[in-house]
Image (tube, rainbow, N blue to C red; front, side):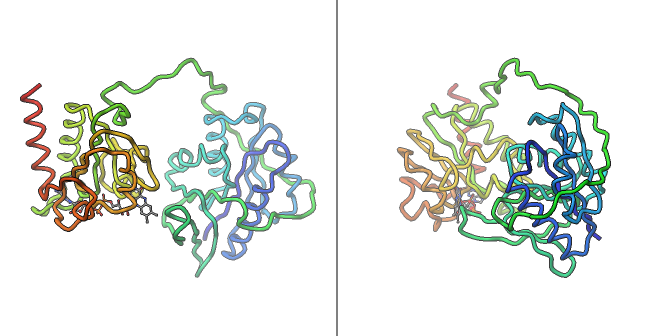
Length: 340
Ligand SMILES: Cc1cc2nc3c(=O)[nH]c(=O)nc-3n(C[C@H](O)[C@H](O)[C@H](O)COP(=O)(O)OP(=O)(O)OC[C@H]3O[C@@H](n4cnc5c(N)ncnc54)[C@H](O)[C@@H]3O)c2cc1C
């Protein structure tokens, strides 16, 4: 049996976006026949609870205090975590917004749950909740379910009519919350050491990694650790900038073995960046159009792929090496090391 918690920070009156998410959460709870609770935090969340007193929640949990008025990671995350625990929620639905978006992944982690953002639909089928969200810049809609709980879901605005109802006096349960830090003070900016920074806009060469680095190799083995060593070794020797395909950076979010130093910031392509470098070397990448459109400002293009029929071979690279990138990069690294 699921337990649904509608969760939100409160500032002034609850926004339209918040009331839409509330309506969607209540509707999901009704479809699942699940207990429905509301969790609110802020300076004085009781007033917000009163404004939605007739929404059908079995209970209102609140974290209140002047320190929860401000948008700040430490206090927002601590309050949200405490509310989720107090409600024993398996599904947490929150309106998208900068305050929630900033903490949702962190709170999911603290609760050993999962978070999804940009959700545009909530449905229940055969007793199980499912979400809808769009991929590839609104080209494809996916319907997802998850087995992990609690499942934290941020819903986009406009997915349901805003909840409407009479205000009243909500019976609230105060939840104790002692955030570790009461105030964030910015004292300066720390940036990564130069050799940890893999995105180097001023580099002559863009070195691109593709999903092939993490795939089973012809000898039947997956060699992610070896791939990391070769790639970092090359980046440090050649002072190249690191780009990636979308397939490879996406693996990280799905919990699969991947290159630990990659983030979505490295992604090149239609839905990634379009860097400018004199030369580009692509490795273990298929060279599909949505990726290679990000190469429009790369001067000389070379690629290493096992597939002689890949996209690079079809006119997208000046030179294609049909070869094993592990072997090639090992040799290249040793040649550069000898020279330097
Ligand atoms: C709307 C839309 C937007 C998209 N936007 C982007 C985007 O911004 N950026 C992006 O990158 N993608 C984007 N994509 C995805 C893109 O279409 C491809 O799916 C993706 O680029 C494929 O990644 P890949 O080449 O790393 O993986 P794969 O297609 O899996 O290719 C892996 C390659 O590695 C080779 N290989 C494996 N082992 C070795 C080895 N030892 N040596 C050499 N080669 C090896 C294989 O032969 C294969 O060719 C988008 C797709 C859509 C639909």
